[in-house]
Image (cartoon, rainbow, N blue to C red; front, side, top):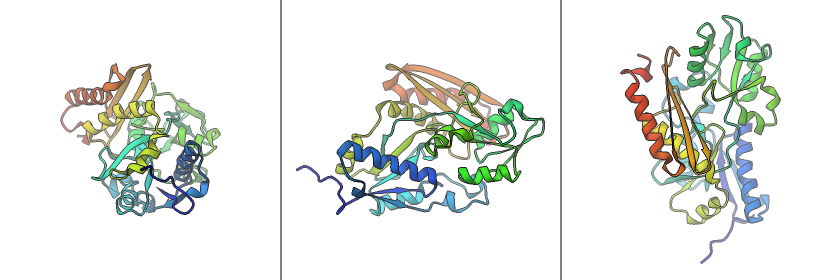
Length: 314
């Protein structure tokens, strides 16, 4: 028996954080499903869920601790049946989903690069000695400290609009955002320059949107299969396997990026001491279908080369 499609009478409930970027992502999933099945907008309901990472803004991500700071409450609503799917920025996602949930739908990946944002300077190289740079990302801070140990690095949290206001208030001379997020918000011109991966390898899964569902919901699985982007799935399989082997989280400075060339995959990875005093990088190439194995092998190499306590900064 064919399952009924979502309808105004029985809308598909899409769970999301409430930031402008998160809402854009949820609406993009809705747009994709509308196009795939010729459905009206009223066949969907966007449900905003407050998460710990958004509610606590006066502490660092490390202080409020643990994985899932931007996902836990949304996943709880999904398991409880309060929503039917959850839309996430993949760079925020833990590598293991709660029992009963699956993450197997990705929209086409956007720009993976970091954006350099400043009201005064055009690029990292233009920052004067001792300039203050704000970032909530331990990875970005460690990568910058490695390249520019003279800079003063400070905690810098909040959505895009909040961070821009902090720059205007002089809290910092520059910050970093994801190019994908700025582009999605129609704010690409905010970036003074985009930082190529060769200069700063991005966060694992940066630029990717994922859609999570319940494992026991075949009707929703069929809907999501129609909008899944295979290439993004192959790239993220490698990157997230790499991250999982390293047990990475928001608290760990890890970078990784997979690129596809036909049926071949090129995976680069980097781990850093949290203070940016040292970095270890490597790469792997192989068949795209073996992405998870490549990710595990790359992580194992970095762990083998890293001194004891490297990721803890000891």
